[in-house]
Image (cartoon, rainbow, N blue to C red):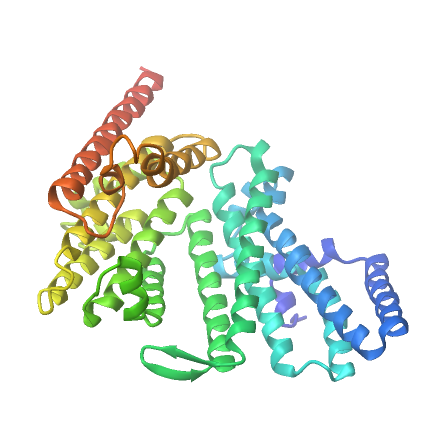
Length: 447
């Protein structure tokens, strides 16, 4: 017999069997019913609406993100994930089957909350839709972060990684809720257009959900050993740069730089900063395998017969660096038309060199290393360079801030040259680390 569409997915069906039982089916409506009846007795219809909204947040964001974050981690701890990876399920089937299946019980409870909200008439359909989209996006983000964090991590750190993934998702949900509250009552100025705040927020939530699902699908492809495809990452970089640049304001940038910035340059400055930040995040989040890097470095020899090989094998941080450099070239070209301020190109290219340095630090500490300690150690080093060193040594070395991080008023001798020197040292350490890993692998090879 042909099963309905959702139940035709064996992973989704398996999760439903795990999540639901007769006792759980009866418990959820009973508890929610008692809660809402108590709210009605205490505060009337307003009490029901308030408690239903709170319960919806708890079910979808607090509890649902925990379920989503642990969808893969729990399988790893149970020792069943490797067998599932060898199954015939395609990446998208595995993705939505796990995401919606693992969180199905939270959505079961959410359905009762939505009915209660509609019955009170105190909450509009648009507000309910926003809450549901926020919950689903947060769950998708938790699933995405959990999948990233458990890759290559020791089994003993799975619980910590699940908690971290859930924290990331909750922060995203709070940001979406805050933006909804702020934008819903006003117009939003984006790329010079005055847009309805509520419609813009709804579009933002839909796009956020779409990108989260695209990211999960891309990582799931890698987990199931499908050929890598960089298009999702490149498209997201372009979207994120364009989206954030749309909010750029010449006055705000001028206040930040403490100098007037040519108006045509402002969106490119914001896009450049967005691409550079996402590139560093990608390096910190992804496992850095010497085997994958060797395969990428060997790609040019295969590219003679397949030109796209070099691009397909490229790690995410290298593609992000390429996009950042391209934006730097575009920014410099636009700046030449209206050269204000005169130090902006020095700042931009020193920022590129600092990014190259930071990538070197991350690779030196994470290459074939412990995915729990390596990224944390790299993050501590970067925070030390960007925050602690400029503050602690400001009295001893007045120009130290400009020498270790991008700073307005940058000069060639005070910023660009030190940035180049640090980038060279960082990648010299990466080269030494690479040789150490290669020598260790050679010693352990039989014969």
